[in-house]
Image 1 (cartoon, rainbow, N blue to C red):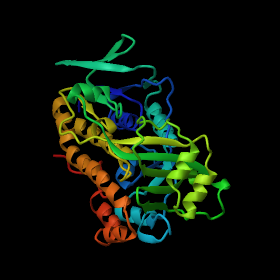
Image 2: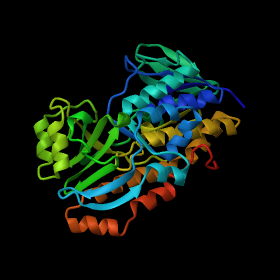
Image 3: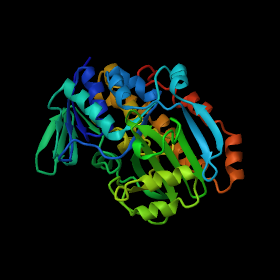
Image 4: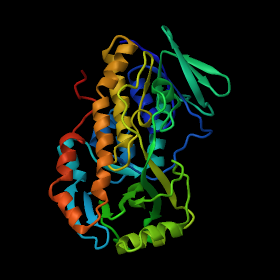
Length: 394
């Protein structure tokens, strides 16, 4: 099997995971990151079985289990009364069905685990303060250029540089981002601030007119994660570091259930972050002869199916397999994207469709929506059952 020197633009979750998948197969990998420190922001993240199979393959499942939480169920509720509309089992049932657990953890913890694993393969794999400006490829390799005037050379380039990907812009041009009309509040609450036995250890979704809320535990149960989606014309930057006044958050959820009120009232008033959500349509080609995309740079998705990071993990595992199966880089990249485009496009599309499911205008509407749709059965059938290490590649 050929062994390649592989350059990765971006040291986020997808780039770090891909590096370990590739190094496990014997490739030499270098990651180039524009930030001055290797760290991650944000709050909760969810890892279902389809990603955990791959993560188990690079030996990080135990580390994830130590800092994660396995939710007992996914529970949908009305925004004001809290009445339960539908529930499907996770935790033991998810592992029984799919052979790997469903885990929720803090994004920063997950990032640190992946960074540590990549550095176990190669201590100096990550190069900081290297902002990518573009690349050039020829028959013998690819040159990655940086803002400081330097460059580096490899056999293959992976653009894992996120929503505003420089590598994607060069491969496919500008991909329009359209504001969805939604923004996402993010806060975390230490559980000692909350009433005892405040919320059962499940993933709780409160749905109502103009928004919804998702709550679940992190850091072995020490933190409660709150994601609140609201419909708003107030468009801000696509960034988890944008803060808005606590009073805005409180006003957005006036009239919602007492559980939501308690969480908001307990939050740090100066740590209320809100991200304006933008939609990007799936693209049908993301590779050249020696460059390809991975994660958000290839298929950015809305957070309504909890699969953004999971898709990036799947990408890395499938790409590593494709490079093993094919005798040339161009053929491997075509095999990789051919086996990822339809699945990732389906996830992106269904995530967008779930927005309507989660924002009913009336109680009657939400009851009607869930009466004709079993959310758990649907996800178990095609989403969680996928294993990137064993799925047939054609």
